Image 1 (cartoon, rainbow, N blue to C red):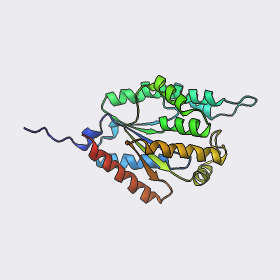
Image 2 (cartoon, rainbow, N blue to C red):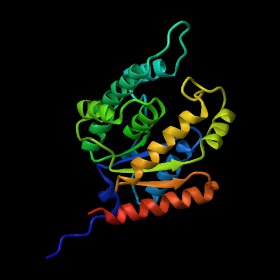
Image 3 (tube, rainbow, N blue to C red):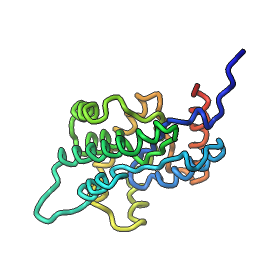
Image 4 (tube, one colour):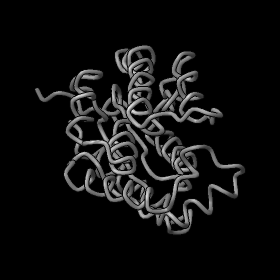
Length: 223
């Protein structure tokens, strides 16, 4: 007798989906689209956990504040910024993400490891092999099950971000910083079979449609 076919909700249990992208790419809106898609798959709302990086726990949020703040007379060094990102990520993964996955929930993350490779690696110019080594020390083989990268022209994204209010320390970097960051994001997606690129410069309706198409394809590939 053949085994009963798994439902969509059963396939999605224990999965970690991540949204990546530059400022103004629309990550928060994309997470809403994913939530709507999950509802169509009959995933109970109480089985969905939402996270953001850096942050997500009490200690990780304090680290986020340090990364974002300006301190008169002292500059946060690039390597210190990188280490703070991973320190915050370890707290989030160990205290929130892994326990949720163990309980059979699905986790939707606003940023994860790609952001360190892209921002601190591409933007800051820190060696990517060094970042990979730090990642391995901090997280081992833990990674997202599926990554949706929202690609947008940095100038357009920053214009959107300015419309939300005052820019933080990282958002005020020069445009070429974000060009380098974007290039690393694109390269990472090309080398990862579990990641896809979404054109975030389209209308919201087309972005939502593109996200749902990719999620449908990914769901179909799950055992």
